[in-house]
Length: 439
Image (cartoon, rainbow, N blue to C red; front, side, top):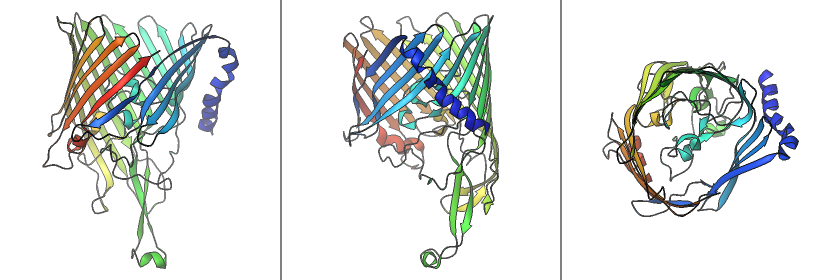
């Protein structure tokens, strides 16, 4: 009852302020960004949706802001488009800090791009290789941030569960789940209320943070199944019983810590999160898969500016399942098996944990000709098994507000291991050619 009421308030409260903010000062920025992806192997188009147009509007009146982030998603192959309100929220700036309410994207953690402590928003896997907030989905929420002396305290309440957007039935994106549960197979989250708290303090030359989040996985898991006695006409095709699987989102708690400090041109960032998850659904199925697991994800990052003004960033990314117990289903033979640290799949945390338990990622970038030319390079290496991603990119600005962008992404796996994620991604190696106009 409370979560339903809170959800309605959060959804409509920003709208009530529209008459006031419409008559206020309006600022806007955006970009028009048509581009295409083409396979390195044969030059064919990779047909996926992309954000053709993005616009950010900021309306201000006194100590109130109303912010929106809008996007037009488009797909070349079938000319389909979709309008997406990525963010729309109200901000109040009292003396103690700020208060926000509406659909928002948050940024917790200290590391660049890979943040195990940042779980307030779900991920859009169509944009997995984009940085930062570009790959996140806004959550209907309210937050309050308090500043005093060297302390910053932020609290967030999310009354509505948000799941990851997965690329189901997309042959051009080969790392989607092997199947898509039907609407009837998905079980609603019983108590969707989620909340988090982050406390940050500056000590000397460093910033330290502690955070806590209680919510539900963004990725679905198998919870149990029913055995249904088939009708006579079904039994001729499938004798015996029919198995009806049930999927949902485990309850998960996250305790995180992060820090960042600089010494001259050298910067150091560290971030770690401890996850505790369980299947807390109370259903009368034929079999309920009791599941409990604990795991840790972490990132260590060094960044350095060379004498030639080349920005170098190196990350060590780790994911360790500490313990897992319960049962799950082996989909190769549809038989229940014990849940172990080997077959447990996290439903929350940094997306790169699905590719590798331990990996190194190095990026370098440099600007030339007064910022008109940018050169980029990226290398991601799986340390546990064969797998890597190499990227080269350049952006050239022929005139103000216009950019021409060219990127190459090459993925390598193990031809002797078809189950390797990077092996399945090899055909996704591509060239990205695009034009960008900023306004």
